[in-house]
Structure formats: C-alpha cells, structure tokens
Length: 67
Image: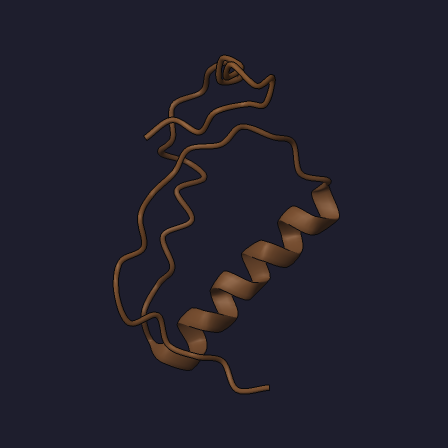
C-alpha cells in the first residue's frame, strides 16, 4: 500500500477518549514512519492539547466535538 502525502491542512476537532497503550504506540510509530517517508512531521498534538473533562452531551445524548 502506498502511503499518500497529506496535501492540505485538515479541519481540527477536539475529542477526549482513552487509547489502549498498544494502540497509542502503533499510532506514534505510524507518525514516525510517515515522517521518515515524506520528511514532514505529523502534528499529533498529544502534548499540547489542554487536559479537561469530556465534552458536554448534545441534545441527542451524544458527545459533541469542540472546535
């Protein structure tokens, strides 16, 4: 499978959830691989996002994303 280059900035959304440690490690390795292939880092925003509680539920009972 060919790894496509990210061509434009994607809209940011904020979500709060817990990742199992092994999945988090896999995603970190993917970001490193992407940087190795394309020479551009992927902003994972893991360290610079504010820590807070979950988003308030919407009127239909599902969690909203904050923008």
